[in-house]
Amino acid sequence: MARKRNQLRKIEIIRDFTKYAAGSVLIKWGDTWVLCTASVSDKVPSFLRDTGKGWVTAEYSMLPGSTLERKERDIKKLKPDARGSEISRLIGRSLRAAVDLEKLGERLITIDCDVLQADGGTRCASITGGMVALRDAIGKLLRDGQLAEDPIRHAVAAVSVGICGGIPTLDLDYALDSHADVDLNVVMTDDGRYVELQGTAEREPFTEDDLAALRALARAGLKKVFAAQKAAAR
Image 1 (cartoon, rainbow, N blue to C red):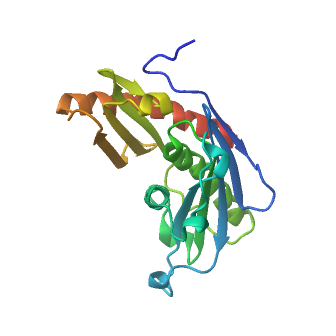
Image 2: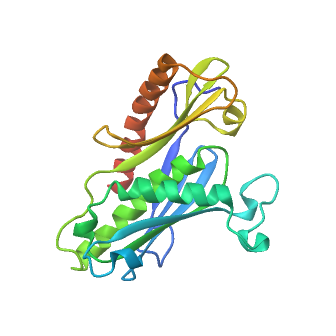
């Protein structure tokens, strides 16, 4: 049965998926599956040493078997994948928007997002699942007495929208994304503020009215994404 143009794919968030990470989440978003793990360290970046502030960063990669044709590991090319680096920075920026870095204290939380299976929207799934892994890692620090106060200010999540065949469409899978006229990734906080908008006219430039329609569609979809995050945390 075909999805409606304003309908999300099924989202399943499985917490505590692996044993050793401070936070570990498998997010299944349709046929896109991403493993998000959070690791905590006292080694902050050099520009934050002795400031009392912490940092949240991310690394993103697509595993060799995540696509129809095997994707080579970065080490084979002896340089980072440009797309992976760009998405890593996006995830890091997005998750830092969720955290009061002063309350986090002088520690580093790294969110690793490894795509096990890709069918569009991997960066949105990584941000959404990474937020849950981040929350779990901070919950552990609070329970262990390493933090006196919760540094999370609000949740962050992301969703893709686009114009496909002239119609605004929510949550693009690969088939839709590969033929979209416009592709827009929307990152928001759960109190309705934007963290980042990444929009591209893949074929035809888009209008203010197109952008308004896409933003409204994303906001409606993100209400359900935030609900999936909250349900997973219970």
